[in-house]
Length: 273
Image (cartoon, rainbow, N blue to C red; front, side, top):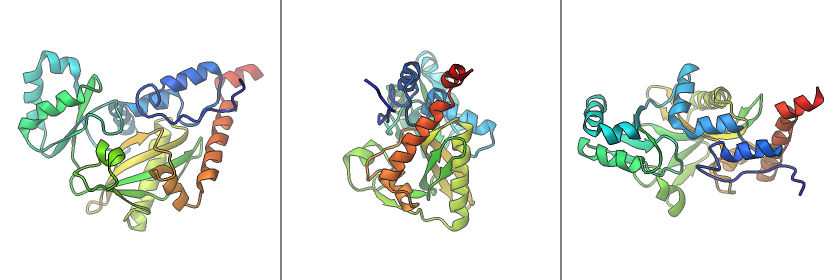
Protein backbone atom coordinates (compact mmCIF):
# COMPACT_ATOMS: atom_id res chain seq x y z
CA UNK A 1 0.00 0.00 0.00
CA UNK A 2 1.43 3.35 -1.03
CA UNK A 3 1.26 5.84 1.85
CA UNK A 4 1.92 9.48 1.04
CA UNK A 5 2.33 10.55 4.65
CA UNK A 6 1.23 9.62 8.16
CA UNK A 7 -0.45 12.12 10.47
CA UNK A 8 0.07 10.77 14.02
CA UNK A 9 -2.75 11.66 16.40
CA UNK A 10 -1.54 9.70 19.42
CA UNK A 11 -0.68 11.01 22.87
CA UNK A 12 1.80 9.67 25.37
CA UNK A 13 4.15 6.65 25.27
CA UNK A 14 4.50 4.77 21.98
CA UNK A 15 2.84 7.58 20.05
CA UNK A 16 4.47 10.84 21.06
CA UNK A 17 7.80 9.71 22.51
CA UNK A 18 9.72 8.86 19.34
CA UNK A 19 8.88 5.16 19.11
CA UNK A 20 6.21 5.53 16.41
CA UNK A 21 8.40 8.09 14.69
CA UNK A 22 11.27 5.59 14.68
CA UNK A 23 9.05 2.98 13.05
CA UNK A 24 8.06 5.46 10.35
CA UNK A 25 11.71 6.40 9.79
CA UNK A 26 12.60 2.73 9.37
CA UNK A 27 9.71 2.39 6.93
CA UNK A 28 10.76 5.44 4.93
CA UNK A 29 7.32 7.02 5.30
CA UNK A 30 6.97 10.81 5.72
CA UNK A 31 5.11 11.86 8.86
CA UNK A 32 3.75 15.01 10.41
CA UNK A 33 5.42 16.43 13.49
CA UNK A 34 8.65 16.15 15.41
CA UNK A 35 11.39 13.66 14.42
CA UNK A 36 12.58 10.86 16.69
CA UNK A 37 15.02 12.83 18.84
CA UNK A 38 12.79 15.85 19.42
CA UNK A 39 9.83 13.59 20.19
CA UNK A 40 11.83 11.73 22.83
CA UNK A 41 13.32 14.93 24.27
CA UNK A 42 10.00 16.74 24.61
CA UNK A 43 8.26 13.70 26.08
CA UNK A 44 10.67 13.79 29.00
CA UNK A 45 10.09 17.09 30.78
CA UNK A 46 13.40 17.05 32.68
CA UNK A 47 15.42 16.52 29.51
CA UNK A 48 13.49 19.36 27.90
CA UNK A 49 14.33 21.67 30.81
CA UNK A 50 18.02 20.81 30.60
CA UNK A 51 18.11 21.71 26.91
CA UNK A 52 16.16 24.93 27.47
CA UNK A 53 18.54 25.85 30.29
CA UNK A 54 21.61 25.26 28.10
CA UNK A 55 20.21 27.76 25.58
CA UNK A 56 19.13 30.35 28.12
CA UNK A 57 15.40 29.86 27.56
CA UNK A 58 13.46 30.75 30.75
CA UNK A 59 11.56 27.76 32.05
CA UNK A 60 9.83 26.40 35.15
CA UNK A 61 12.54 24.90 37.41
CA UNK A 62 12.27 21.34 38.70
CA UNK A 63 13.91 18.96 41.15
CA UNK A 64 14.24 15.44 39.66
CA UNK A 65 13.61 12.36 41.79
CA UNK A 66 14.53 8.88 40.51
CA UNK A 67 12.22 5.98 41.35
CA UNK A 68 15.09 3.70 42.35
CA UNK A 69 16.36 6.26 44.87
CA UNK A 70 12.80 6.75 46.15
CA UNK A 71 12.39 3.03 46.70
CA UNK A 72 15.77 2.43 48.32
CA UNK A 73 16.33 5.69 50.26
CA UNK A 74 12.82 7.04 50.66
CA UNK A 75 13.30 8.87 53.98
CA UNK A 76 16.60 10.41 52.91
CA UNK A 77 15.17 11.63 49.60
CA UNK A 78 12.07 13.01 51.29
CA UNK A 79 14.07 14.83 53.95
CA UNK A 80 16.25 16.42 51.27
CA UNK A 81 13.21 17.58 49.34
CA UNK A 82 11.46 19.01 52.39
CA UNK A 83 14.48 21.23 53.00
CA UNK A 84 14.44 22.61 49.47
CA UNK A 85 10.80 23.19 48.51
CA UNK A 86 8.00 25.59 49.35
CA UNK A 87 4.26 25.17 48.91
CA UNK A 88 2.14 24.82 46.93
CA UNK A 89 4.06 22.70 44.44
CA UNK A 90 3.42 20.05 41.82
CA UNK A 91 4.73 16.49 41.75
CA UNK A 92 4.51 14.89 38.33
CA UNK A 93 6.00 12.15 36.15
CA UNK A 94 8.81 13.40 33.95
CA UNK A 95 7.70 11.40 30.93
CA UNK A 96 3.92 11.29 30.94
CA UNK A 97 1.18 13.38 29.36
CA UNK A 98 -2.42 14.54 29.73
CA UNK A 99 -1.67 15.48 33.38
CA UNK A 100 -1.69 11.80 34.38
CA UNK A 101 0.06 11.30 37.71
CA UNK A 102 0.16 15.04 38.47
CA UNK A 103 -0.69 16.17 42.01
CA UNK A 104 -0.86 19.64 43.49
CA UNK A 105 0.79 19.45 46.92
CA UNK A 106 -0.16 22.04 49.54
CA UNK A 107 1.62 20.70 52.63
CA UNK A 108 4.68 18.57 53.53
CA UNK A 109 2.62 15.57 54.66
CA UNK A 110 1.16 15.17 51.14
CA UNK A 111 4.44 15.12 49.22
CA UNK A 112 5.28 11.42 49.66
CA UNK A 113 1.88 10.27 48.42
CA UNK A 114 2.13 12.61 45.43
CA UNK A 115 5.49 11.11 44.46
CA UNK A 116 4.08 7.59 44.81
CA UNK A 117 1.37 8.60 42.36
CA UNK A 118 3.87 10.10 39.91
CA UNK A 119 6.00 6.96 39.94
CA UNK A 120 3.06 4.93 38.66
CA UNK A 121 3.71 6.57 35.28
CA UNK A 122 7.47 6.96 34.99
CA UNK A 123 10.81 6.09 36.57
CA UNK A 124 11.58 9.78 37.16
CA UNK A 125 9.38 12.33 38.91
CA UNK A 126 9.68 16.10 39.06
CA UNK A 127 8.91 18.46 41.89
CA UNK A 128 8.08 21.93 40.60
CA UNK A 129 6.82 25.23 42.03
CA UNK A 130 3.11 25.85 41.44
CA UNK A 131 3.82 29.26 39.83
CA UNK A 132 1.01 30.83 41.82
CA UNK A 133 -0.32 34.06 40.38
CA UNK A 134 0.85 33.30 36.85
CA UNK A 135 -1.33 32.94 33.77
CA UNK A 136 -1.41 29.60 31.92
CA UNK A 137 -0.72 30.48 28.31
CA UNK A 138 -0.21 28.33 25.22
CA UNK A 139 1.23 29.10 21.79
CA UNK A 140 1.16 27.06 18.57
CA UNK A 141 4.29 26.77 16.43
CA UNK A 142 4.33 25.70 12.77
CA UNK A 143 7.22 25.07 10.39
CA UNK A 144 10.53 23.32 9.87
CA UNK A 145 13.69 25.42 9.56
CA UNK A 146 11.83 28.75 9.77
CA UNK A 147 8.94 28.15 12.18
CA UNK A 148 6.35 30.77 13.06
CA UNK A 149 4.17 31.20 16.13
CA UNK A 150 0.44 31.79 16.35
CA UNK A 151 -1.42 34.22 18.55
CA UNK A 152 -1.20 32.84 22.10
CA UNK A 153 -4.22 31.54 23.97
CA UNK A 154 -5.00 31.23 27.66
CA UNK A 155 -6.33 28.33 29.75
CA UNK A 156 -8.93 29.32 32.37
CA UNK A 157 -9.65 26.09 34.31
CA UNK A 158 -12.53 25.99 36.77
CA UNK A 159 -10.83 23.19 38.68
CA UNK A 160 -7.84 23.86 40.91
CA UNK A 161 -5.50 23.18 38.01
CA UNK A 162 -5.72 21.95 34.42
CA UNK A 163 -5.79 18.23 35.26
CA UNK A 164 -6.96 15.16 33.33
CA UNK A 165 -10.60 15.70 34.27
CA UNK A 166 -10.51 19.33 33.15
CA UNK A 167 -8.91 18.35 29.84
CA UNK A 168 -11.05 15.37 28.88
CA UNK A 169 -14.01 14.69 31.18
CA UNK A 170 -15.52 18.06 31.99
CA UNK A 171 -16.66 21.00 29.91
CA UNK A 172 -15.97 23.77 32.41
CA UNK A 173 -12.57 25.04 31.28
CA UNK A 174 -12.68 28.33 29.41
CA UNK A 175 -10.26 29.28 26.65
CA UNK A 176 -9.33 32.87 25.84
CA UNK A 177 -7.95 33.47 22.36
CA UNK A 178 -6.08 35.74 22.22
CA UNK A 179 -4.64 35.42 25.71
CA UNK A 180 -5.14 38.38 28.03
CA UNK A 181 -1.68 39.77 27.40
CA UNK A 182 -0.55 43.21 26.34
CA UNK A 183 1.23 43.40 22.94
CA UNK A 184 4.72 43.32 24.46
CA UNK A 185 4.05 40.18 26.52
CA UNK A 186 2.28 38.53 23.59
CA UNK A 187 5.33 39.08 21.42
CA UNK A 188 7.62 37.76 24.15
CA UNK A 189 5.61 34.53 24.39
CA UNK A 190 5.61 34.06 20.61
CA UNK A 191 9.37 34.61 20.35
CA UNK A 192 10.10 32.21 23.22
CA UNK A 193 7.80 29.60 21.68
CA UNK A 194 9.77 29.64 18.43
CA UNK A 195 13.07 29.58 20.33
CA UNK A 196 11.99 26.57 22.43
CA UNK A 197 10.78 24.81 19.26
CA UNK A 198 14.13 25.29 17.55
CA UNK A 199 16.48 24.39 20.41
CA UNK A 200 14.63 21.12 21.11
CA UNK A 201 14.82 20.12 17.44
CA UNK A 202 11.09 20.16 16.73
CA UNK A 203 9.71 20.13 13.21
CA UNK A 204 6.25 20.53 11.76
CA UNK A 205 4.22 21.42 14.82
CA UNK A 206 4.29 21.81 18.57
CA UNK A 207 2.28 23.56 21.25
CA UNK A 208 4.44 25.40 23.75
CA UNK A 209 2.93 25.90 27.21
CA UNK A 210 3.90 28.80 29.45
CA UNK A 211 3.39 30.37 32.83
CA UNK A 212 3.34 34.15 32.45
CA UNK A 213 4.06 36.47 35.37
CA UNK A 214 2.55 39.81 34.43
CA UNK A 215 3.96 41.64 37.46
CA UNK A 216 7.52 40.53 36.79
CA UNK A 217 7.01 40.82 33.01
CA UNK A 218 8.40 37.33 32.46
CA UNK A 219 7.29 34.17 30.67
CA UNK A 220 8.48 30.68 31.58
CA UNK A 221 8.24 27.65 29.29
CA UNK A 222 6.50 24.80 31.10
CA UNK A 223 6.65 22.11 28.40
CA UNK A 224 6.36 21.38 24.67
CA UNK A 225 3.71 19.08 23.22
CA UNK A 226 4.86 17.64 19.90
CA UNK A 227 1.46 16.08 19.14
CA UNK A 228 -1.03 18.54 20.61
CA UNK A 229 -4.77 17.95 20.64
CA UNK A 230 -6.01 18.26 17.08
CA UNK A 231 -9.78 18.29 17.05
CA UNK A 232 -11.52 21.38 15.69
CA UNK A 233 -11.99 22.62 19.26
CA UNK A 234 -8.41 21.96 20.42
CA UNK A 235 -6.13 24.86 21.28
CA UNK A 236 -3.51 24.19 18.59
CA UNK A 237 -5.80 24.60 15.55
CA UNK A 238 -7.97 27.22 17.27
CA UNK A 239 -4.96 29.47 17.88
CA UNK A 240 -4.00 29.14 14.23
CA UNK A 241 -7.57 29.85 13.17
CA UNK A 242 -7.42 33.05 15.25
CA UNK A 243 -4.13 33.84 13.49
CA UNK A 244 -5.75 33.54 10.05
CA UNK A 245 -5.02 29.91 9.11
CA UNK A 246 -8.11 27.71 8.74
CA UNK A 247 -8.29 24.08 9.88
CA UNK A 248 -8.08 22.60 6.32
CA UNK A 249 -5.23 24.96 5.40
CA UNK A 250 -3.39 23.99 8.59
CA UNK A 251 -3.71 20.27 7.87
CA UNK A 252 -2.45 20.76 4.31
CA UNK A 253 0.47 22.88 5.51
CA UNK A 254 1.50 20.21 8.04
CA UNK A 255 1.42 17.45 5.41
CA UNK A 256 3.44 19.65 3.05
CA UNK A 257 6.01 20.21 5.81
CA UNK A 258 6.24 16.44 6.37
CA UNK A 259 6.88 15.83 2.66
CA UNK A 260 9.38 18.69 2.55
CA UNK A 261 11.32 17.25 5.49
CA UNK A 262 11.43 13.83 3.87
CA UNK A 263 13.30 15.25 0.87
CA UNK A 264 15.97 16.56 3.26
CA UNK A 265 16.38 13.36 5.30
CA UNK A 266 19.67 11.46 5.34
CA UNK A 267 17.94 8.62 3.47
CA UNK A 268 16.99 10.82 0.52
CA UNK A 269 20.32 12.70 0.52
CA UNK A 270 22.19 9.36 0.48
CA UNK A 271 20.15 8.13 -2.47
CA UNK A 272 21.02 11.21 -4.50
CA UNK A 273 24.79 10.98 -3.90
